[in-house]
Image (cartoon, rainbow over all chains, first blue to last red; front, side, top):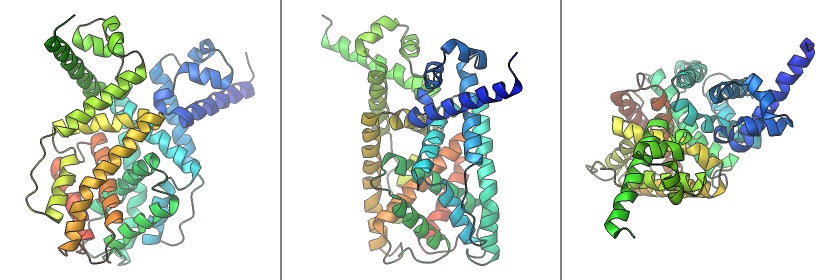
Length: 199
Length: 199
């Protein structure tokens, strides 16, 4: 029986290989064969870990979750709108690493929409994201940085929607959406929401 | 040799079957076997039409394009902001049919991000969509419905981003985002962009 350390090391190898496959090919390219090739291992060895395609996809989502959670996020410079801006910039594909992360998540939606269990996970993941944004929106309302009477829920949904939609446009058209353009469009939106004009 | 009419009828059968597979399972579930089963045909027959998985995916994107183009769009009630609102509502999953259409497009992003040719097609499709929205944004600026000095390009990207991001949230969480909620959040955004408060 292998030592505990071996087991952990092997698990880390699998996790790294899964991530490299996702980063290069998305979930559509995630197969036992591709992961095995990344590890210089046999497909047979991997079927020990993943008895089904769904088990492999579920594990890949765990790997993506771990990667996202360990993301080295920027420290918010101040509460309210400044923190909201930072939280949204954290998601946008402003760096090659963030582009890979986003590409993996966008590519996961196909499988998550087609599978009830995975769909529930993604629904929960969305609500967790909105829950992280909501306090910043509430702070901005409390501080008068957003107009009085604004609906915290509607504003939270709006900035989340805008950010993911911009992610998709930028992934498909990186030339048209370099980092500074993404941030400029975000700042225009935040200015509009704050009640200023868009220019 | 079959008559021309037979050929067209068969092509229509294939197209219908491809659409039904996409609607039920997305691009991740699109296989020759699944399409053949939908047609009660042999996989061998279909390989005559689709020599590769990529050929099948490319054809499926054509089918989705045709379906989207033939979409019975609402007639804009007036130019400017009203037309922009209608154009965005046309995209949102406000009906079961629109939800299926969106599910197909969102599920196509995985494959399009992983293939250069398909990626170029999606990049062009995005630009065509923005090109349809842009005149409405310009009209709204010209009519003073959007603040003077607003950037037509930034506003167009913003409403497109918001709409697709709301599509994704609503597809994963239809209970939280019934049609009236989607429209309410859209109207809040349009009011903010117009320079009004969000309440």
